[in-house]
Length: 130
Ligand SMILES: [Zn+2]
Image 1: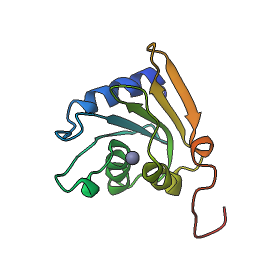
Image 2: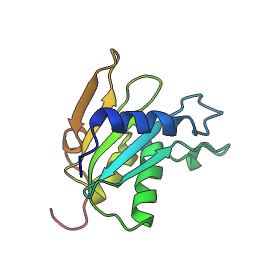
Image 3: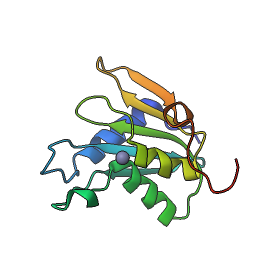
């Protein structure tokens, strides 16, 4: 099976962002998470009037994958109105299952920018030494 390309993943993330529920921030985000086996799980941000209950697109995608029995991931694509990397909470959640995760986003000029989770969160919290 052909691996899903970064651009294809970004397109899936863009489509997922169209489902975002973001009436408070107006910042609609989409994520597409590629499993080690080639399955893709998408997510969008889901805001709440009680702001602290808002869930980011990345964690929605991760939870969908976990709920379907997938525990290993290779790449996360992130789509937002302007280029962003995942927040600290999402990085920590992603590190639980994919400490080697690649993360890609659409750059300002439409190019694909990539970084490793470990570069964004070099000292993730783990109960057991890794
Ligand atoms: Zn987040």
